[in-house]
Amino acid sequence: MRIVVSGAAGFIGSHLCDRLLAEGHAVVALDNFLTGSRGNLAHLRGHAAFRLIEQDITQPFAIEGALDAVVNLASPASPKDYLDYPIETLDVGSAGTRRMLELSLEKGARFLLTSTSECYGDPLVHPQVESYWGNVNPVGPRSCYDESKRFAEAVTMAYHRKHGVQSNIARIFNTYGPRMKLNDGRVVPAFLDQALRGEPLTIFGDGSQTRSFCYVSDLVDGLYRLMLSGERYPVNLGNPREMTILEFAEQIRRLTGARSAIVYQPLPEDDPKKRRPDIAKARALLGWEPRVSLEEGLKLTVAYFRGLHATVP
Ligand code: UDP
Image (cartoon, rainbow, N blue to C red; front, side, top):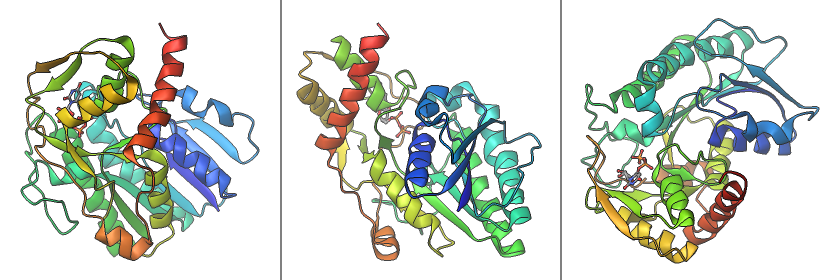
C-alpha cells in the first residue's frame, strides 16, 4: 500500500512509519514540526519507500499519485503541549482532520483516525468501554484537545455515512516508549528525567489518580490491525494494567535505582481521576492485546532516556 501519515514526526507517528515500512508499504509522511521532531524520522532519511513533506494539514495541500490509506495522527498530544497550543490543537482536529478525510475521499483511500481516551473526560464509568459517551468539561483547559478529538470522531463518522469513506477510529490510552519528548510534561518522561537526574519526582495531587500505560510497539500493532479491519466505530487501544501515579513513581524509582524524593504539587484542573481501557472489543475484533510488560517497556524507555541524558546535559 501507499500510505499518507500525518503527524509522522511525533512519538507514535514515527513508530507507526517504522512498522508500515517494515510491512513493505510506502509512506508519505506529513508533519509541521509544531510538536513533532525531525530527529524521530532521521533514521528513515534516504529510505526508498519513505518521503517526508513539511506540511501543516490545516492548510490546503495536494498529494500526487494513488493512495491506499490515510492515517491521521497530527495533533499536539501532551497536556502541556495542547495547553501551549490550544488553537492549533482545535484547528488540527477539526480543519486538519477534514482535509485528511477529503484526501481519503479524493483518492478512494481508507482512513484511520487516532482519537483518544480523553473523549471519556473524567470518566464516571470504569473501566472505560467504547459505548460510554464520556464526561468532558467543554470549557475547561483540556477541552481544546478533548473536544477537538470528539469533533474529529464526529466528522470521520459523517464522511463514512455520507460518502462511504472506509474509516476506523482508535481511542488511544496513555502510551510510552522511546522518542517521547523529554520535556513534554507527561508523567513518563517527567518522572524518568527527574529520576535520571536524581531530582525529586513531582506528583500532581495526592498521587491516588490512576493511569494504565501501554508500550508503543503494542499500540502500533493495534493501530495496524485496526487499519486493516472493517470496524467503523471507535476501538480502545491501551494496556489495561492500572496503577496509581504514586505506585508508578515508586516503580520508576525501583527501576532506575534513583534516590529521588517525592514532592507533591497541585493537581491540574480536570485531571481525570481514573483511567483504564476495557479492551474486550479490540481482543475480539482484532485479536489484539498488549504483550510488553510495564517492566520490560520501561527498561527500553529508560535506556533511551539515558542516551538522551548522555547527549543533552
Ligand atoms: N502527573 C504527575 N506528575 C507529572 C506529570 C503528570 O503526577 O510530572 C500526573 C498527571 O496529573 C496525571 C497523570 O500523571 O494524573 C498522567 O499525566 P500525563 O500528563 O502523562 O497524561 P494524561 O493521562 O493526564 O493525559
